[in-house]
Amino acid sequence: MSNAAEALPSWDLTDLYPAPDSPAVEADFTRAAADAKAFAAAYAGRLADLSGAKLAAAIAEYERIEEILGRVASYSGLLFAGDSSDPVIGKFYQMVTERVTAISGDLLFFTLELNRLDDALLERKLADPALARYRPWLRDLRVFRPHQLADELEKLLHEKEVTGHSAWNRLFDETMAALRVPVNGEPLNVSGALNKLSDRDRSVREAAGKAIGATFNENIRLFSLITNTLAKDKEIIDTWRHYDRPGSYRNRSNMVEDGVVDALVTAVRDSYPRLSHRYYTMKAKWLGLEKLQHWDRNAPLPDDDDQTIPWAEAKDRVLTAYNAFSPELASVGREFFDKPWIDAVLKPGKSGGAFAHPTVPSAHPYLLLNYHGRTRDVMTLAHELGHGVHQVLAGKQGYLMSGTPLTLAETASVFGEMLTFRGLLDSAGPERRRVMLASKVEDMLNTVVRQIAFYRFETLLHDERRRGELLPERIGEIWLQVQRESLGPVFEFSPEYAVYWAYIPHFIHSPFYVYAYAFGDCLVNALYSVFQGGHPGFQAKYLDMLRAGGTKRHKQLLAPFGLDASDPAFWMKGLDVISGFIDELEKGA
Image (cartoon, rainbow, N blue to C red; front, side, top):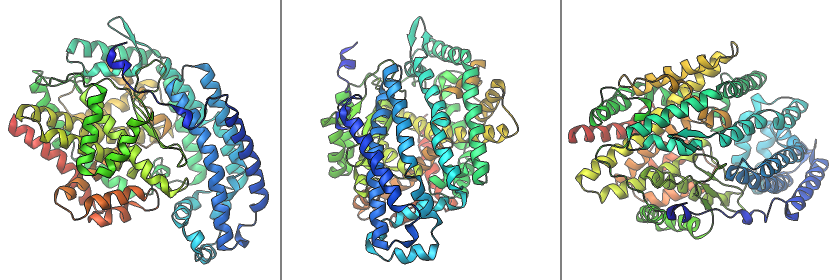
C-alpha cells in the first residue's frame, strides 16, 4: 500500500455502537420491541379520539422508537458498505434487517391510521401548537393516502420485504463486491477497474473497458434476473397501489409532480445536441480521434496534467472553497475531517462509488468515498461533504422531518461542488482554466445528460417489462439506444458496452432515483446564478434552506431566491450554464 493510501481516513462507527456483538445492540432491540408493543396497545384504533396534544405526544413517542431502529439499521448498513464480502458482517446485516422489520411491524398501524383520519378532523387537532409542529410530516404522509392498502396487506408487504426487494439488493451488493476484473493481469474490484477508464493511456482504458464488459457479460444472466425480478415486483406493487406509471411512486416520495419531472426530462433531451453532442465532438478532435469509444468518454484531455492530489490537499481545497462562501458552512464541514466520520480507503469488499449517510439526528452523518487522488475525486469529496453538512444542519428538525426529498437532497452536494470548482477556477491560468472548464462540463454532462439517459433507460425497461421478461440482449439494446441518443453520433459503441447497465446500483436500490441528480444540478446552476448576481442575504437564506430539512417543499424553499421549478423556463436556465461553458471552450479552441 502506498503512503498516500495509508494516509486516507477510515471511519469509526463506535459513535453508533461499540461492535456488532455489543450488549448495547441487543439492549436497543429489546427496548424498541417492548416499546413498540406498548405503543400499539396504547394507541391502535384510538387516534381519532385523541386531542391534538395527545396525538402530538403519540407522534413524539413513535419518532423516538423509530430513531432507535434507525440507529441500529444505519450501523449495520454502514458496516456492510464497508465490507460486504465478510460473511459475519453479512449475517449481522441480515439479522438487523429482519429484526427491524419485525419490530416496526408493530408500529405500522400508526401511519395507516393517521392517513384514515378525516381531513377536517385532523385540521381541528392541528390547531394545537404541539401537533402543529408535525404538520409538514403529516402533510407528506398524506400524499400516499390514495395509494394505501388495507392494513393486513400493508403488514404482509412490510414483513415480506426482507425476502423480497431487500434480499435482491443484498444479492446484487455481495455479487458486485466479490467481482474481480482482470485489467492487464491485475485483478481489480469494480471501482478500481472503472477508475482505469480515466487513465491517460488509451490502451489501458481500452483494456479496462473490455475487461469490465467481459466480467459483467460472464454474470449477465444473474444481473438480468435481478433486474427483471425487481421490475416485476415493482409492477405488482404499483398496480395494487394504483400508481399511474413506474416513476410515479418515486415522484411522490420526492414531493414533486410528475409534470415537473417530465418538463426536466424533455428540456434535457431537447438539449442533447447543444450539450453532449457538441462537447464530445470537440473532445474527439482534441484527442485526435474520428470516433470515440465508450472508454474515451472520461479520458483526460491531452493538456491535462491531472496529477495525484494528496488527501490533505483535497481537504484544504474543499474547505477553503466552503469557507469563502460561508465560514459557518466550512465549520460544520471541518468536523467531518477532525472526527473519524469519513471512510476514503480503497479496500476489497467495500461498496463502490460514494455516499453520505445521515444515520440519526442523535448521532451524525458518515461519508463513504473511494479516493483515487484525481480531480474528480476532489469534486466527489466536495459533493458528499455538501450532503453531510446538509444532514447535520437539517438534523435539528428531528428524525421524522430531517430527511429531504431526493430532488432537494442533491442541492447542497452539487452546490458544494460548484463552490469548490469556482474557487479552483478563479486561481487557474488560461491553459489550466480550459482544462478545468472541460472537466467541469464533463462532470455536468455526467450529472445531467447521463442521469436523464439512465432515467430514460429505466422508463423504457420498466414499461417493456410489463409485457414480459426481457432477455439480457434486449436490455442491452435499450441501454445502447439511450446511450446513442444522449451521447451523440461521434460515439461508436463496441459490443461489450451493451452490458454496462449492470453495474449501476441506483437501478437496484432506488428505481427512478437518478433524475434527482439532474434536478439538483440544474437547480444549483440556477441558484448559483442568483448568488453571482449579488442576491441580498443569499448565504443566510441558503443556510436556512438547508436547516429546513424536509419541512418545506421545493416551491417554498426556492421562493426566497425568486425561483420556481414548475416553470419550464427554470430548467433552461440551468442547462444554459452548461451550454455557456461549452461556448467558452469552443471560443478557446
